[in-house]
Amino acid sequence: MAPSAADSGAVDELDARLLLLLTDEPRLGVLECSRRLGVARGTVQARLDRLVRRGVLRGFPPELDLAAMGYGLTAFAVLEIAQGRRGAVAERLAAIDEVCEVHATTGQGDLLVRMVARSNADLQRVIDEVVDVEGVMRTSTSIALSTPIPHRVRPLLERALDTSEEP
Image (cartoon, rainbow, N blue to C red):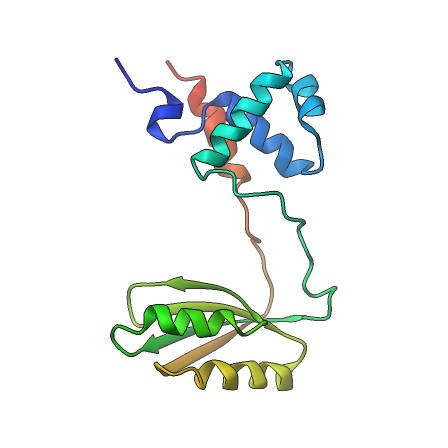
């Protein structure tokens, strides 16, 4: 017997429809979601609980425009760090408010850091803070000129809808 979508970690059609609905309108309540999806309120709640338990759904934070908040500059830094220092470096980077996310990577660098700043001078200050973190050996920074494709998950959810219709 083939594993179900819930067992395999995949998202089935109802999960995808629910997640798309919440992606488009994150403030919808469970009752309104059930009405729009044509399923019982308990079904929606059970699906949400399962998606949270599996780690698929991590929360409902508002989507913020950092440029509108005064942080119009986005930069990416590739950091080379001392061996065995990833955890300590990441902990120190988390203390820098303008560091938005950090990814451990393969290739030339060890960490990829996305950071924001109010101006070029402010970016220099942020980079100086990053470089001063004990364990950071070398950095290479690039400024983002635009974001032609912002963070997205919609295509993956839509693919889940398409694959759920296959035999």
